[in-house]
Length: 275
Image (cartoon, rainbow, N blue to C red):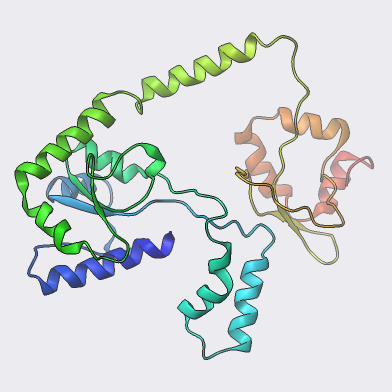
């Protein structure tokens, strides 16, 4: 998905230049538009390009990266695309994490059109109803540009997206707060407190088992990740762990950075009942 963000820009910039279509398409970091200039830029254009956000590959244990590096060393003649097809592609689509990014909400709120690769977009917007779909093989590019030039039709699509997504209220702060209130209300009516379920993060421990660092502070799993043997022990356990979990996250985060790498510091601080 990250690759698509640059390829759609590169391909469409070349196509627009070849067809004399006015455009302002960039993808390099030094061309980033920030702050209020971003909204001015967005309102000054007829339509924005876009792709789904997210990643469909979770390399929890670093195996995929290791395989890529090993393949590159063993076959230096292979291109990045060939290495991707051989090593990475088989891991695609085990989960579907295509998400609706903030840019699309901004464009819809500002009544700017959208030209997007086909996708689910969190089931918030639908092709042809809310945006002009672009096939990933670009076979419908002529039709896309024709629809972009049809201003009255494009305006209907823009207005429909604004009505359904923005005026509908399903994605505003009021709905967010309402959902949180409802979740709290339901939790308070479920009877006695349920058993606390631990939250895990992936950590990296050095060969001497003396230092560690968190790979994922929070891990929103959509599919199980294989446990490796030997199974890691919690770095803090017993009463010390309960005390740690009671601290607000804004306190835990800087403390974790301070005490994090040497694990021996943690052991010295919390006693002999921890690992």
